[in-house]
Length: 335
Ligand code: 13P
Image (tube, rainbow, N blue to C red; front, side, top):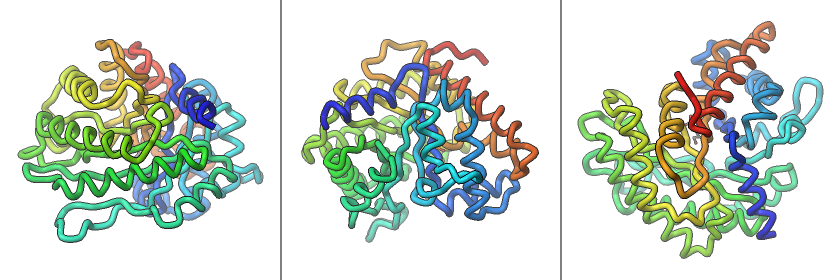
């Protein structure tokens, strides 16, 4: 089992490839589809994902794994083929988001804790049976001059550690996602503040993982980049790359199977440029790639706009973004 989990993690971190996060909950999918002028129904959610998973060049050459949502992992394409099969036929791995979302943390206004541990052992066994080989759990950490609280960081990281241990027990590679949100107020969310908070969060996360007995070689970290608040971005691409690499060098053990970034509301091109700057400018001690949702899907959903006549245009947009991020993964992207 140990060897197999390391193999799965290594496949996810294959050079020139990265992950597609297609695990938006029904609520989030509604927002993303609305932005593309599409009404969210079970069918349009399926159609949008089928469009992506059938984009052959992207799925075969640039995508190593796809993170699915509970509804999606059970869905079939219009012709009856399970969506999981579309993914595995292209040579990619199917994964599953298993947290049940962030709820307000009691006595801590403005902060959340991610839930979903109850019954998780049984759910993981079921997802494994449905074809999942890896999983994801996201904690959301708000940032300001006073947040996050120690209580919030510790509660979220202990849940991440318990989830990761359950995954390894069930034969799934855990992706641990301690997301320091990128939408903080520019007055209180400078790149330096983001570095300070990201460093503290990650340091505590690895302590929790080790304490829970989690094998780092079988674990992938999905972090935010170190960046200033989106409302008044001042940091240059080089600065973001340098601060991100500096922070992770301080906190992320080289034993980890890899780091796969979330895009967190950056524009598609920003997310590509930042990854490229890290890969081209630094000698990195861990495999590093992308695990984007918005930065891979946004252009494709807009081009598609819910119309079957536009499926090819949507797929072209997805192939393009995937290819750009694959180039960035090699540090070979040019604007
Ligand atoms: P974004 O790339 O849109 O941040 O989404 C990644 C993800 O999986 C968030 O949990």
